[in-house]
Image (cartoon, rainbow, N blue to C red; front, side):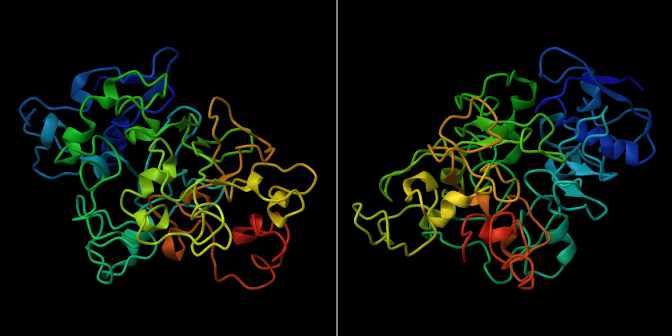
Length: 374
């Protein structure tokens, strides 16, 4: 079979993920990164099929009869499922959001930045607190508690939740189906993230900005991680659509902004005392002696991988923070987008015993990474 040659980056392997499933089924494939553009390259037939027929073999990677839209050989989940649990073995760069075998969680494991749908899919039943219940290719059923009404929603969401499109996160939010929503993006140059197109938006989240880690935070360090876009808002009604939190607010808007649930405070409805946790708010606005200034440790103020903060400037990766528009609280400071082993998609286990998460002080994990004296 023809080989597919690609370059490490984002879109070079999004469709390559499909080929990983083919490999799991016993098809021998070799994928090597090469220098140059991040545009997907190689034989079209590795990802597409003209007639859904070749040598009387099933063309779909998941073994179904197919075909998929856009002449694809696999859909979103089929293409982004890991058969081995390996995200980056030094040769193959594979952005997966779902695993067949249980992933290892944490900075030294193989779970990527967005988390993994494994835990919500493995839960069974119809109560899915450990992940977004994306109803695509049998990934998860409708949530039996929430149905298609996201928490903090104003009632305008009309699910079910999908990967992309009108009721999804990725791609063109006007498109009526997942495939049209991201059509062409995998083949476009994403060297500059400006938010002007799906391809040039952070992780194909249309309009969102950010600096993308080349291997999707596979075993990240303080100097190799995503740099998330945030903004230091001055009013609850302010909604800068280029931030990651603003994207979350398209479904969970009352957790981010909304005149129906204003924050009581001295700053025109945005400030102390808080009645819900702030997002797109810089901890640098607090007093220099506040507990929040201990984020990352009182000596170094290192960027904390377990509780990442956003920055107004995303031109470079920050290994330390200075509390100058670079400690902006975001939704994903506490949560992961796809799923985690913990309820509410939290990055940590909120119910750990008092000797760990609630022991106090920076570096102890969870809420106390910011609330350091609690």
